[in-house]
Length: 177
Figure 1 (cartoon, helix red, strand yellow):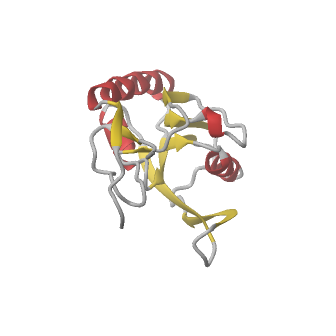
Figure 2 (figure 1 turned 90 degrees about the vertical axis):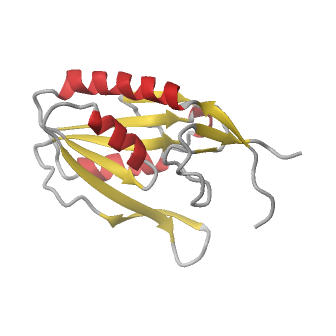
């Protein structure tokens, strides 16, 4: 598999905890009486979503979606499809989409549009990280943990080639050479 990539810490577990606490306080303020559905985008959002939910002390539901942008080959087809859909009825409900990273914006924009067609009462986006330098599609992030530089990140549930999800910090892959 070649040499291991060199990782450097971008945000420590303590900095992540502060951001998650701040986001939970903002979400609690806005959703305390609404019994929202939180929808996590698999796989990257699972750690962030679990930590966030543990700090929300009000009734809510949890759902997950899984998307694919690959056809039969190994290159992205550019077309996103829903592989695992939401099981709950979201019409008339308050929905909060939980994302690990908004990069080009393509996935978040697709999913926000897809979910809005199911006629929720409200639909907002909570992202742990945002990489605006790579944005191709405009996306409004209602609750944001961190803005990050144009670097590839991994850790805290976010993977690089299915590796490094277990790391407690958010790291970036350093360029070689």
